[in-house]
Amino acid sequence: MTPRSARRPAQNRSRTARKPGVRALAAQATRDSLLRAATKIFAKYGLSGASVEKISKAAKSYDRMIYYYFGSKEGLFVAVLEEAYRRFDEAEAAIALDSERPVESLQEIVGFVMAYYREHPEFVTLLNSENLHRGRHISKSRRAGEYSSPAIGVVEQVLRSGVDKGLFRADVTARDVYLLIAATGYFYQSNRYTLSAFLGEDLADPQAVAGWEAFVKQAVLRTVSLGTPSSPTS
Image (cartoon, rainbow, N blue to C red; front, side):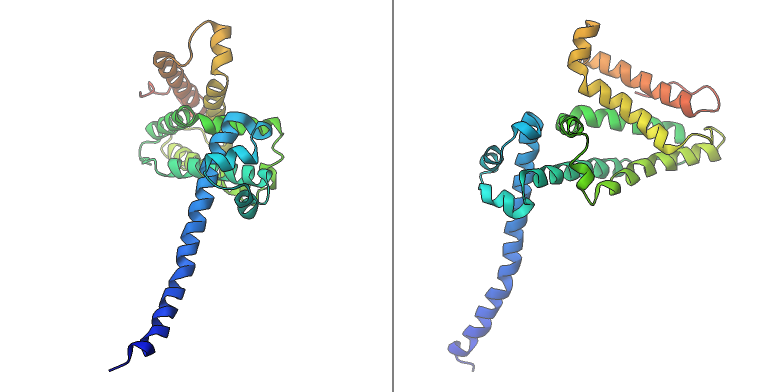
């Protein structure tokens, strides 16, 4: 029988082997917490108004952890933008589109984009903030180019199906259609307060939102269709 004293070194080695995994999980949890807090603070105050102290306090962490994981406040801002784009792509990839029904699928994409902007106002305010800085920070991201491909790829697949079925024009690019959808959804959301005052109506009213979404669906279908598009779905 092996004495207990002989077994202790193996047990100690086992505990030591487990520690790196535990430390990695703790580190990831800290990083994720800082990202969540930074998303809220940057969305509320913008890059200039947000401070390392506000972010670390919101994350119940320490200033030094921001510098440890992200290098600087600007580095953290880039990481927040990357995460926002990643989440958008992930949500769009989860849409169940039927390639045999390109018209309905395109309407589905329009509905998703417009709903995503409404349901994630922090995404819009983060992009607003970065555009005030002329994209100076996201342009430094090594991953920035990764985010457009999946989004445009989804539209391209639907357009190709529509062309194959003789429903859509072949001279319309997925890039242009995506920009059309993004522009109509983004502008409505980002400027809803000033537009509401200017037009004298509440653009956040559910009926106004539904009416605009139906109009955009029809406009997109008119742009890509060979013939008269069907009525947009709700």
